[in-house]
Image (cartoon, rainbow, N blue to C red; front, side, top):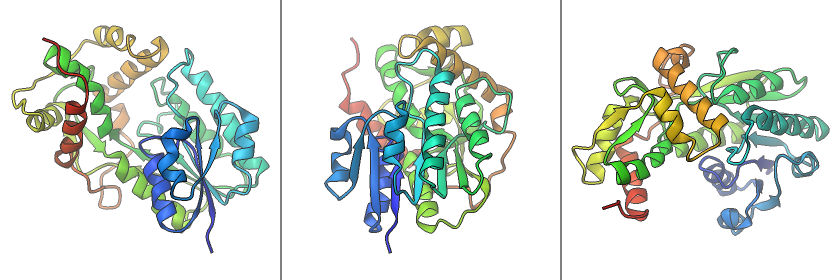
Length: 302
């Protein structure tokens, strides 16, 4: 007998493949997204689309109606000046909708670093949503804590094309877990289809291996015929000034704070890699996807 799954962030890099897995398994899938065009391939396969904004509590409550389980993520706050307030608004809407609709299973997309209850970086809102959902009675909650998304390398494309280098505020020789979003989607699909998780728990998803930015840039550089591509670790202030051009000041500040926490080792204190939290996609395999995105974008500046 099929179940009804609600997928928030269904147009995103995790939500879209996750919904696809559930549809392929013959389940009833309701996708939550603001843009119908971005989930058309899912609705063409039979998904129901609830179009709206997760900042709207009444919309979220309606979207969760009749759900056996929900996949919750906080969409990136592209237009929010106060990232934490935005996260709390979405969190409270999710909490109210889960309680109102008597949803019994919840999978949260969280992150490395949420073990630190004092964090002030970009994952603070995710830490808060983990803590809030851990207080719910009668609801089984699994928080997925993936490593650094390989897809974050796409942000390097304009830097490479304009400056001829790759860079961020993270140390070049610091190795940490990189994970492909498709692997996160596969783990989430398995947990939702099985629904064997009980109580409150978390699960790390750490990718194929730990990789440094120096190594990752060398690998993607070779894939785009730039074998000498170099990675530069920018000073924190310089990195923040550059990021403000692409996102709100609050988001940029929190992203740089995450780089500080990574460099200081705080982000990696709570986990150990094992066969269960290791996933298959390597940075070498992902470099093919990166190359396709690189060549599809605007040409390099002369």
